[in-house]
Image (cartoon, rainbow, N blue to C red):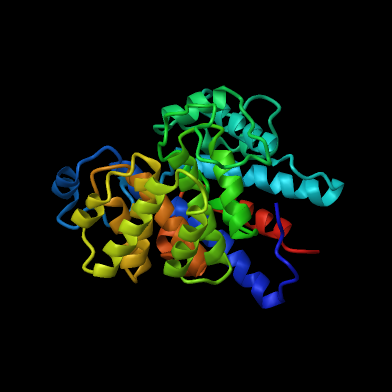
Length: 355
């Protein structure tokens, strides 16, 4: 893990806002899409009107943004990375993040099989009752974490299948990987995200898509434009054997965004988002083609596919680009776990800033 190097006070404030934005934006996009996951576009429009969903689904106590496993796993990723950075800073012990990441995902798995925190659990995400909700977690994520594989921190990414679920390239890799890009270089973000993805998914496209998202986020946090960040991530991707599916999906997203005139039908031309490269492409397209943040998030979720994952990825990108103040305030206030998400973001940012 790498830290930011000697930033000014203003740069530190911008960085922290982008970290909060990335995590809160991902949660907002997830919450917008979760109620319509598995729902066809025709049915979405029949239920919500020709524009589809335009905000959080109404509940017994008003509109509330409930998050899914996408944000759950993202937060456990943040917890692991923050712990790894702290350990490295305090004890000078580096290279332990793969085991810490696996242990964090094992804690997430515990929340999927219990109704509430166990007796004596007093700290960390395991103590958060709202995370003990099973909201359609991916089968590869569940079975992969159960296999307890911790990747080698020096793993060579050569395009060969990983040992866990080697044929799976589901979007469960990419939807949790934005935190790897917060506070490090794009090269490092790509490598750690791709290695971390192999805890659950072994298909090269699955882990390369995770690496690409993390690299894009790293460039955004450093102040690059979204298009520039994607192009730089593509150059990084193309160094690796087996990158073709992920690269092709990103090129398709760039070309489609350049046409303008966004629509749900164009989103669906990129796929349904159930697999990693499609989810990444939809998130990138939506964030690029719509200049308005709110419109981009809604575009990312209103389609016949994995709406929460594509919304989450779009939100990660927009938040990393604009910071938390650039997100729709009402949606941020209404998202489940907002205070915990913001606190985790600040903890991670603090570990990445030199003291």
